[in-house]
Length: 176
Image (tube, rainbow, N blue to C red; front, side, top):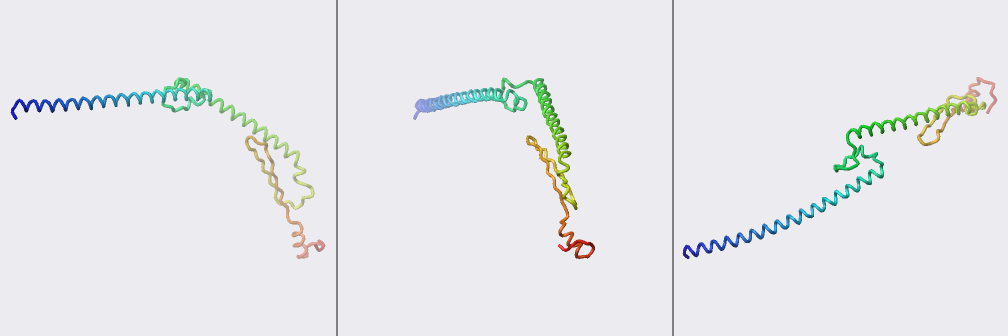
């Protein structure tokens, strides 16, 4: 093989390798553009879903959750810092108002329970109950339920007491 033939063979190999590399580059560019287009479509779809979710959230909660939203998306309803401070202030006032309303209702329930105890005092400690050893009252104030009053009267077992006294002969109690 002479020098000229060697150059042609070498040139032919380089041309063939160059053509192969161009085809590979073209295939990679096509694959890259297809994947990029697919990712852009997915991204657009996700953005549209987030936009719809933001609108739905705002509509359903009337913006109440906007203050606590941690969504990493530029929501059009997301309040700025000053609006967040105003919303937090308003929320605090509403919570205090609810707490004061419950407090006022609880105070009234306590007053009502006290009056109920006054009204029922005679029947709670019945005149036929002698030898009372203990008396307890429990008042239950459950939120969203009617208050209840439980009371318990403990008395000495009269029959057993009389038996002990009779056996010791310390009384004029007749035999039981």
